[in-house]
Length: 246
Image (cartoon, rainbow, N blue to C red; front, side, top):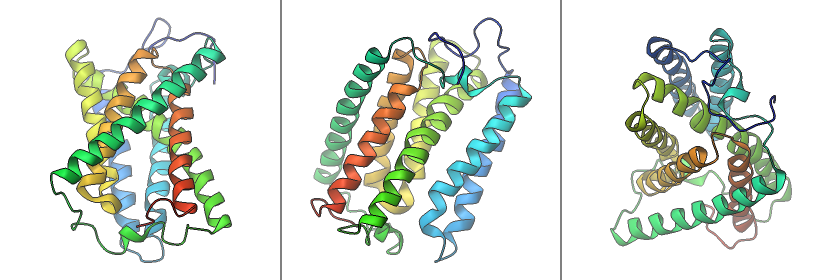
């Protein structure tokens, strides 16, 4: 984590990758994300870890690609914010808005009759051993902060938006399309255990998060905090038996 000011990726002193380099970055990062997850989902003993492992593998690949482009994660938003109180305020706002968006989307999907029958029965039981199980709860909370809070925000909001924007040649339309496309990929990554309803809801949350990323001048810390907090709330509700585990 370097720097002391909020600044978008590609400012003076940091070379922005060309469209060709951005395409290569996306190919390596998304290729890793999809391939590793697909491979792990084939094994009954490993499918529960398919999401976390594929995300961590992808962020390592993304780090390698950033080094090749003489960039760092600080250039994509993992840098010291100007104000701690401002960051916490934005984090709280992002938490409220993303939770509200997720609830609203899920309600609309339920009203539309999307039942989620497309989910493999194995994958729908991802958190079946979580209710009342403290060690499992602690494990998933740690994973939700490390992988959900940090890795997903770095990868989807940081890496994907910057590379998709560059691939689409920059400009306002490119930024908008980058935010939309990263949200589509984010939603797709949740499809295997949440079905269409979950994919659309998480995709909508990612869309809102992408907008916040831009409003925050591409600083990731408020989104990391809000994402980790939202995951913790959801896991706590399942642990306490207040929300279904499957």
